[in-house]
Image 1: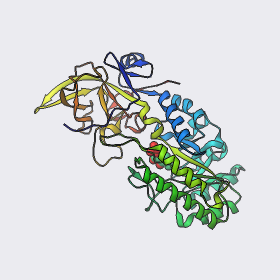
Image 2: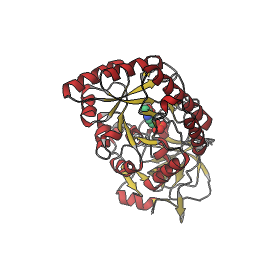
Image 3: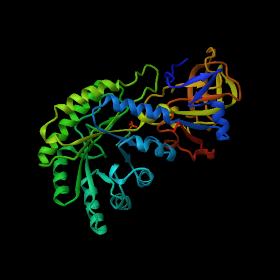
Image 4: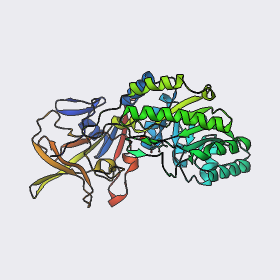
Length: 408
Ligand SMILES: Cc1ncc(COP(=O)(O)O)c(C=O)c1O
């Protein structure tokens, strides 16, 4: 038997059936008309945002919509956050439908000219990733007769320790190396663009508060150093994010209150050049991962060489991350339950696999579950981020999963 992550505490059960928001898993499947489906409970998202606000000093909270760009989820989260961070013109269009352009920033290497046109026309901030991109943005601005709004994305000389995805402290396609950032700021200011400040993103999926605290402190110091070198104070410093969530056995949820206390102290003691600067944190998964459940139905149960396979109608085509093929080095089990037998005694060790013709399509590897029958619903938790939109949905031609947003 292999361990799996702890079930999120936000969910309850009634008469042995998982409840998500105000309905049972069976009701959600009936409402969807079919399985598999994702259910996102916005009440959970709202309570996480409230927790963030209570824990943090007076800074802005941005939602990185790459984590979950579902339109109903975006409409529900937009009024609760101060900004949206996007990574393509597709995401930009979705963000503009729910939030003013002034609160939208667009990051990502390789922005095409048509994407620069879309952002500059709308008045969104470009987090410029290179000198070349800045030059193209000026040219587009000239052509359109519009002043581009630009922040400089810095490839920091800091890494976020223990993060699942490091994006700083090394050669990177993301941002301009810290040693060249002040020069780019000067170029932007001299060219008459509306300089919005810095975007400094050092990594994702960190659970250690001390690592986040150290990174935030170093990021504030870096922003101050660069501002002094450029000779201008930044209106905004986006400190990145990196708040992780506990996917796996042994993971301990991030102590956000501790991070908030330390950030309050760092900001209170910030260098003078940042005295009038606003600060932002941009989060994806920490806001939405726990709010999502992927429900898939058992189609068959079979034995092979003394291993039991529970075969479900959903798989990595919808929920790639749970199969261990989205950014993890070692495959580990997400939290999984039999949604129709909650609270039943665990009695067997099974592998939960999808219908795809690849051994990669394994959602649960040798996990302990109650006795399962064909027709049961299996719940895979932590499915609110990097699920439907981060999975190869066209692979093998199965229909997409239904997505339902509730608790609005
Ligand atoms: C620039 C940027 N912002 C935000 C995020 C969101 O990260 P997470 O969902 O871990 O909060 C990422 C993730 O790759 C990113 O690259």
